[in-house]
Image (cartoon, rainbow, N blue to C red; front, side, top):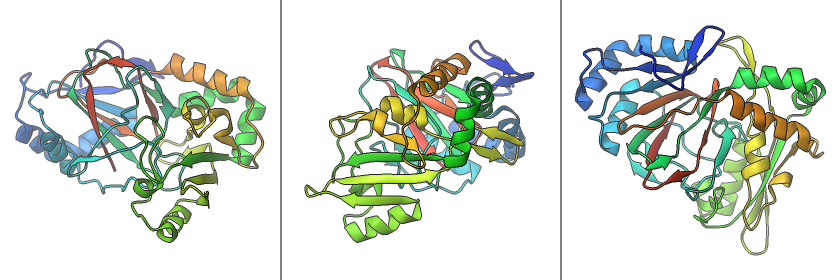
Amino acid sequence: ETTIPHQKTFTGVTFPAVLTPTNGRENTPSDFVDAILEEKQFIESVLQKHGAVLFRGFGSLKTPQDFNGVVEAFGYEELPYVGGAAPRNIVYGRVYNTNDAPPLEKIPFHHEMAQVSKYPSKLFFFCHVPPAEGGETPIVLSHVVHDRMKKKHPDFVDDLEKLGLKYIRVILEEDDTSSPIGRGWKSTFLTDDKKVAEQKAANVNTKLEWRDDDSVVTIMGPIPAIKYDEKRRRKIWFNSMVSAYTGWADKRNDPTKAVTFGDGTPLPATAVYDCLKILEEESVAIPWEKGDVLLVDNLAALHSRKPYTPPRRILASLC
């Protein structure tokens, strides 16, 4: 373990943890894989304690294939990307592109796929091409956000616990790459059959309402907005409320109507924007370096993306 600028400390624990090669030199991709296989128990203990781990100094990781080998070495089961909002393509093996929303747009904080009932437990990010400027992937500890919101808006948090959240989104038949939430229903549910799409949607607690132009209204939830992290014994802010309310915008969707309480009543804007402020204040944004791998426990931390100057290519894998 090492320390770098930008890390923060919460109750004596640094966030995120940073691991570098023990010999101080750049190892080959196969050396990195061997180290993961040998030290997996240690790495998982670090992830459990810190919530996220940045592997830095492994600049020999240069390709999606190298990154795929790293992901495979951990041995986690792959999670199919069913129900997520962003258009994604398989790059190689278990490796996907990240959300390719326009560079000047910020992608708000969210737990990956928190709006559906089947979500990844872990996320891997890989810096294939570092941004010319900006483009960090900020992360923030979920329990810290919960605790601050509980203190500032106790009644709102109580209502969230009782009612949960409902997410509503209009999506087209095919992907709309001009939209950060433009994933079409065919790729969302990995089928071109409406009946199969309905079955897969039901499996992730989602209802589909078809429209005449073959677009569809997806109604996800009600789904809990606050969960209990059994491993760490603390409540977490496990939702995409701020992301939907401030970022689910395109020609078809009004973000302020994209998320409601579970009973359909509107959310108070003041509480949502206070949450946005807390997320920003408590977040950590470490500039990407080529070959970086960031492992995030999806129950421990939310993530986002800052605007950037191209080029930038960050790849991901969901487990």
